Image 1 (tube, rainbow, N blue to C red):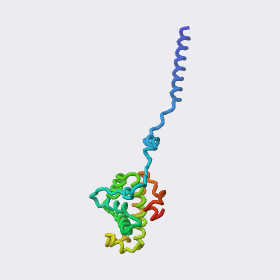
Image 2 (spheres, rainbow, N blue to C red):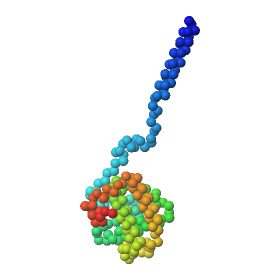
Image 3 (spheres, rainbow, N blue to C red):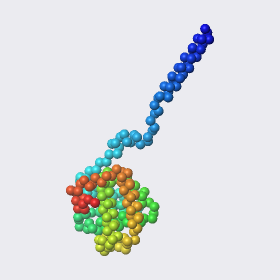
Image 4 (spheres, one colour):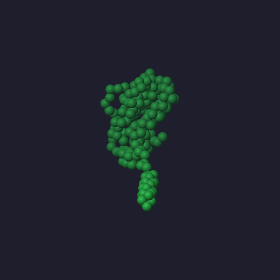
Length: 204
């Protein structure tokens, strides 16, 4: 009789252990940690606020600098359209972009990152517009239009646009586009073609 009770106790203990094991196996595993999950769950962190009101100079960014590269970026960002002397500033912007493409210092991308990081959302969106116009200007200069005499008048006498490799321009454009998209720039300026200077150059 004692042996039967003892056997029954052991059997119950074994069944209890099996039940506990089964419960543990059915417990769902915790979801894997996704480092970017918190960011995706808070879309406000990725919101961009572009406000094309006020004077156009407020859309530009011209920080104090003592390096050689940032002034080229400022020249691109400060190009004008539809004003006296605008064509000279446009040529200077295009030349500045080409100088940036041919820069051998190895500092261009770092300067670009610093420059874009210092801007607000509107300034970055406007720089995207200015960059696209400067790329068009660079392509035109490499083809001999507008008149290359404007090079001297814009302070770039002796600069040879045809010496700038197209592959370098393409690579630089890809880098800038990637950096801008990294700041969630979506070319909001294309929705404001009733405003100058967007109305002057059109969309393209």
